[in-house]
Length: 99
Image (tube, rainbow, N blue to C red; front, side, top):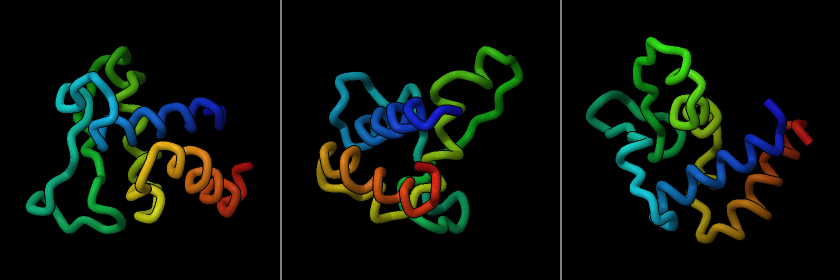
């Protein structure tokens, strides 16, 4: 997947989870609760629901889960959209060698 699309997807997930998007996130993304299993990494891990049809498998809410869950806590807990998008996610992708 192109890095530009990943950046845009991660920005939308951040906006959904931090209530900066006018759309309701409860219809699209589900945050894993601590009671479901031991949560490693950050506390905003997403649950990937079962998808039988291809239209669901390749939808936004299904394709962003693995990428979002792989982000470290310091990126996910950014204080603002600008800090998340322009500073932290760029620094993380640069350190991983994706840029």
